[in-house]
Length: 324
Image (tube, rainbow, N blue to C red; front, side):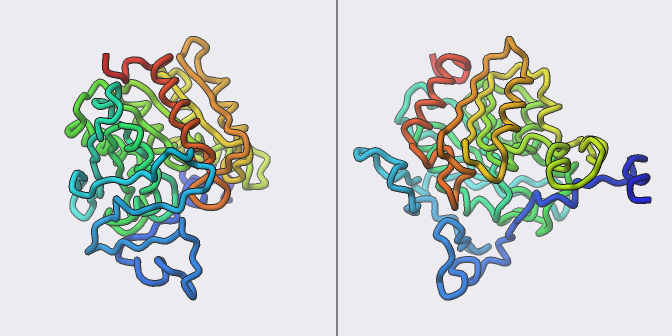
C-alpha cells in the first residue's frame, strides 16, 4: 500500500531522510556547549543563545596542517558584521549575516560568496569556514535555514519551503552585495540542496560545491533496500544534479577522497554529466574527509591549496567574478 501511494505521487520519502540536525538557539545550553563532563568535541560545541551575538572573532581549533607557518588564524571583526532578518511570512523569519570584504585581495573586493552550510546545528558550527572565505578577501553572505540557530519557526523546513526560502535569501544577498554581477553560490554538504535552487533559478558568475549532496534519488537508493530507482520515491524538488544538467554557470567541484558522509563518486558522476562546453573543474583532495569535525575536510587539509584552487578556477574559468 505504501509503495502504491508513493507511486501515485501522494507521498515521498524526502522527510524520512536525515537532512537536518538543527539546533534552535532556544535549545542552546550547557549541554550543547560543553557536553557531558565538558568533553564535547571542540568543533561540535554550539554555545550562542538567542540573546547573544555570534563570536565572529573566535579562534577555531584548526589542524596543524591547515596553515603554513607564516599564516595566521582567520578572524572577523564583529563590528563589521551586518545582521539581517529576512521576513518570509508571519511566524517565519530567517537569520542572515553579511560580512564585507577585508580588502586584502583586490580582485575579489566586489565578489560575494553566498554560503549554504550543512545539516548540523546552525551558523555557529560553520563560523570557521566563513572566516576562511573572509580571509580570502570575499564578501560573505551566510544564512540559517528554518529551525537552525535564530531562524524561525524552530522546526526544520519542508523541502518546498527550503527551496523557496533559498531564493529569498539569494535576493536578499543582492541588496547588500557591492556588485550584483559578481555573485558566487557556495554549497557545503546538505547545502547542496538550497544552493542548487539558487543556481538553477538565479544569475551568478560561478557555483562552487564542497562535499555537496547533489540529489535525493541516489541517497534513497543507497540507504533503502528497494528495487526501484530513487527518483520514483522522491518529490524531485531537491534534485540538484537534475536541475543543473544544462547549467551555464562556471562550476568548481571540490571533494575529499576519503569522505565517508557523501561519496566522492556522486561528485564524479555529476561532474561528468555537466555539459562538455561548460567551464568546469573538479578538485579531488587526497586524504580529505567530510570536514568540520572528524577527519579534516577540503579546506582543513591545507588552506593554501584550497585558496589557490578556488582563485585559479576563478581566474581561468570564471573571470566574470573578478574585478578587472
